[in-house]
Length: 289
Ligand code: 3HC
Image (cartoon, rainbow, N blue to C red):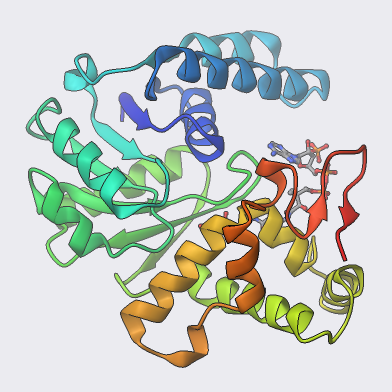
């Protein structure tokens, strides 16, 4: 891949843009306004500078990567890109509009990929110009740190599309795993029930927020406890994914915990909104119950 477009300049989109530019690709970074995309580029510059300070990359490499990222707010210039990766909000109607708009501007051989965490790829492909060039490319947060990409082929995805996306993932230095287009793919099928179960345990008064997190972090040697991780992923995103698992399988084991639904109804989305299971207004997160 020589050049890609990343749509959505949030946490995931910015991370994907950063690692792709660092691997030498030209990256058009798109969002609703060019200011949003430019702000994301400023954030990427800070991340790259931290890597320079830690002597993990040279300052000339950091500058070269940054120069490759071009903020945009419409799709007029994406015609030369080999791949378009959508990393917008995890809502099907938003993604579908993007695929329809992008489909009118991408070139005939370009791949359209979605970073969706759980929406079926075969279904999303219906809004793309060619389902054989549509694929799931699922990154993990924080993208520059996490070593994995899940590749999900829809029913109509071609072998050529899988091969080109595999080459892209390898160029980023990530470990690749291949999943069928099944609910939650591999990671979220296993992760979300664990986070949801931690919410049930909290709601039933089994233990405090801090003790649930300490128990799992130290008892299972996880980098962070499940309620901290749910806040990190975003409680709204956790609920969206859990609802997809529940509705697409019909299996009651995936029903969302009432406390997770309540927190999302309250707008307590976790770290990004300043409050979830923890309050993030101070220097260190404080459990809210
Ligand atoms: N961006 C870039 N780098 C980051 C970062 C970020 N947001 N957050 C932390 N880092 C870097 C730090 O700079 C540090 O780098 P160094 O080792 O070179 O100094 C390194 O990561 C470790 O960071 P810290 O020492 O500050 O803190 P921790 O040791 O606690 O690590 C963590 C932070 C990497 C986030 C770690 O807690 C972790 O791995 N947590 C689990 C993350 C996880 O499970 N992600 C997957 C979520 S699920 C998902 O994304 C799928 C979706 O579909 C829901």
